[in-house]
Image 1 (tube, one colour):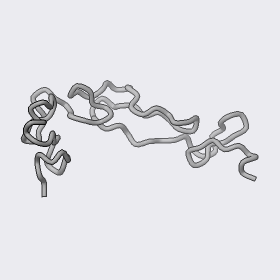
Image 2 (tube, one colour):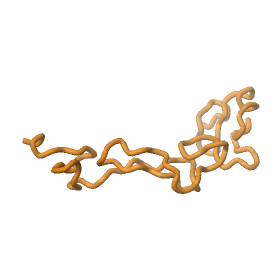
Image 3 (cartoon, one colour):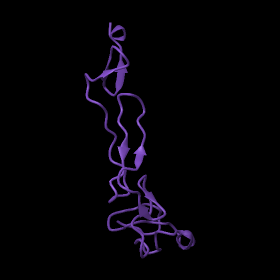
Length: 109
């Protein structure tokens, strides 16, 4: 069951700004849960001022040296899933990436 106006984007909705008062103030989403004219998006890490951020805009910084940053693709409001360097990639001198973290040999004994 889809309910427009509950602040949850559900199947068939492009956005959901909540109650009618909130929707009056929302620059991107209308009270019938569709994007306002000219709006590409209403929310998301790759959405700003109702427009998709440019291709190559960083939406998630790397957390550590075994993590990789993620970038907006210019056609979606969503940031791509978090990705990491492959296990076995060298890091911090004599360490190796394993399960998203840099581990030193002496830590493994």
